[in-house]
Amino acid sequence: MIESLADWLIYGIAGLSETTHWGKAVHFFVYETVKIGLLLLIVTHLMGAINAVLPIERVREWIASGRLRGAEHLAASFFGAVTPFCSCSSIPLFIGFLQGGIPLGVTLSFLITSPLVNEVALALFIGLFGWKVTLIYAGSGILLGTVLGWGLGRAGLGRYVEDWVWEIAQDRADGDGPERKPLREQLPAISREAMEIVTGIAPYVLAGLAVGAGIHGYVPTGFFQEYLAGGNPFAVPLSVVLAIPMYANASGILPVVQALVAKGIPLGTAIAFMMGVVGLSLPEAMMLKKVMQPRLLATFFGTVGVSIVALGYLFNAVL
Image (cartoon, rainbow, N blue to C red; front, side, top):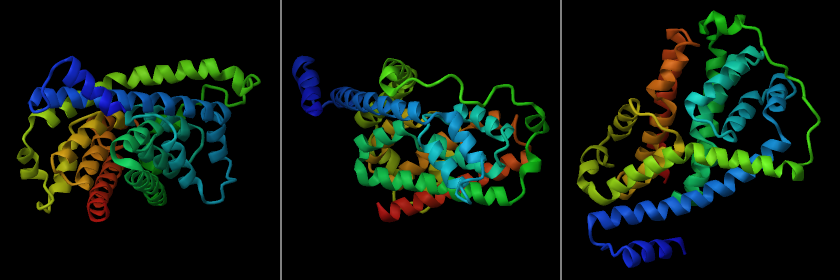
């Protein structure tokens, strides 16, 4: 239905030809914008309702309470997966977790998973690649955060967190606050918050779609196949290295990933590129440098980077 609408608008009303580079690029942009826009509206409203019932403060207290009996890392990773944060916006909450008494390894589980997997990214994944790839990606992202957070926590790296993080007193109350209204009465506020999320990430999504449309319409297939094709054994680590200087959230980079796959790049290589962009960016490193001493920062980025490369090879093997 959406594709038919895009065909009618671009090839019928606008009169562009589907055989031209410009026609293909504009059709890609319009089709994906409508499809992704609808998914974003549905998912952000749904997750807003869930967050209204299960507020972040209570989740943080629950993780710190010790009642999870060894499942703290999995819970933190799952919490990261259901919060719509990019890597940089996850860092303030990461600091708050540390100051709230949550162990470093548990907070790292959240920090690793949060930019990689969230409801917005999964909504886009479903629209672009289908349920199978989405479930594999989501499960891998949560597992990555769980395992790496557990391992880094056991490595005794807490002493490499900057002293000011431990010294600053928590300056906000962690109580329940005023009595919460019934969900039905919160719906207008939920809708406003959902629209704020959608409008906030819209520029990144549109920018990603514009890049993806340009790749889809103008870049020859052989350009990417020459360097990142499946026949190149170093394509996956190369894609991760190329991703580090870039920065985008998952919503903005996914249309680019789809365009790369359409040009013949293996899906695992393209996903590794996306993970590198959203999880290993230079802006994130610059922000974390204020929280982590060099040894912890290097260990964190090195471990996550190697794991992303391994996942890229695994995705190429099974997808």
